[in-house]
Structures are given as C-alpha cells and as structure tokens.
Amino acid sequence: LDADEWQADGQAHIGDPRRLRHLCEVHRANPGDELTLGRLGGGIGRGRLAHLDAAGAWFECDALDQPPPPALDIELILALPRPRMLARSLEHVTALGVKRITLLHTRRVEKSYWQSPELHPDKIHQHLLLGLEQARDTVLPEVRLATRFKPFVEDCLADDIAGRRALLAHPGMPAACPRGLEEPATLLVGPEGGFIPYEVEQLLAAGCEGIHLGPRILRVETAVVALLARLG
Ligand code: SAM
Image (cartoon, rainbow, N blue to C red; front, side, top):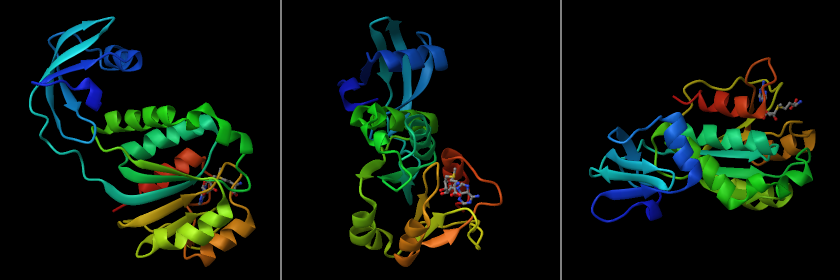
C-alpha cells in the first residue's frame, strides 16, 4: 500500500487499475479474503478485503507491525540494458533485497535506451513495486542514473566502494565468483555487448575485483541473479 492508499482507522483503498488487475488476476482475491498487506516504507500485516468492484478495493487492516525482511547492503551497478531487460532486472533485484541500484552508461549501451519510457521515474517505481510485492518487502531501493562512465568512475566509484568488496562480473576473468559472498558489497554487471577492455581496465584500477560466473555467457538479468545467488 502506498501512503495515499492508506486511510485512518485501519482502512485502505486501492484504485489504481494495474494494482486492481494484479489483485484480481494474480491473487484472485474475492471479498472476505484475508491478504498479507505491506505499507510502503513500513510494516507488514493482515487485511480483509471488504469490498471489490471496478472502482477499487477496500480493505480493513490489522496493525501492519511486522517488519519487512532486512535490507541487503548490496549495491548493484548495472550498465543500462535494453528497456525490457531493465524492467525484469529491476524487478528481480528488488525482490532479492538490493537497496541501491546505479544504472550506468558504458560504450556498448545504446544511447537511445536513455530516452526509453521505462526510465521514467513512474515506470521505475512500478518495476520496483512489483519486486517488493513479490518479496513481501516494503522498502524501495534507491535508483541512481550515472549517464557518463568516466566521471562516475573517477569521481564516485572509489567513495562508493570504500570498505566494501566490489565484484566486476566479466566473462573470462581468471577468478571465479566467490560463494557465500558477504555484505557490504558492490556488484557490477555489463551491458548486453559487455564492457569494453578500456572500461574493464578502469574499473579494476578503481579497486574492483574481476570475477567470472562460469564458462557460459549469461544474459544481463541472469548474470544479476546469479551474482546475488552467491550471497551467503
Ligand atoms: N559478449 C559479452 C562479453 O563477452 O562481455 C557478453 C555480455 S553478457 C550478455 C552481459 C553481462 O553479463 C556481462 O558484461 C557480464 O557483466 C555479465 N556476464 C554474463 N556472463 C558472464 C560470465 N560467464 N561471467 C561473468 N560475467 C558474466
């Protein structure tokens, strides 16, 4: 539940058509059903669907006082992938608990991707919400855009990764990705065409460790999930 869906005295109302569709088609909810509800940025609890029609869903909620799952101190730095892949990647990493995502420009990122409607803050918000709903989490990740590679690496990266392990996923690196990876960590994943050698050089020089994820070349969204699956 977003803040504006929450009303005083334990009542909540969902009017957004996408969320209503999700409620009816995915959860197959009917009046009288008990559902798990989360309040964005807050707790989780139970609610009863009191009324449902085309105009909205009305809930009577218990105290939403259970905390969401703990946030992971993992930052993902992801070269901006094509829009459909971006949507799925954002949803997956949010569901897996990542709380900071940087979308980075690299040489092999299509410039047109930066104009994609998927990058509109409302669209990003929607993808993050889908991930949160899936995972029964309520804390939105922070999403940053880094539209220039060199200034980002020169001015921000060293501070970002100070005191953290920073793993650069790149096929053919000699070291395998460690298992049981611990927080805090920063994970870097390249675009569909991969990082160019200059970028790998710069990222390694800035303090990242190059790792491989096995002999297979994975799609961006698969590489992201494979990395997060190594967390201990
Ligand atoms: N031809 C590109 C290359 O050789 O880098 C493939 C890019 S892959 C589709 C997209 C991104 O996923 C890569 O830049 C890397 O970050 C990650 N990735 C995919 N497979 C990987 C692997 N086996 N080991 C490490 N990283 C991988």
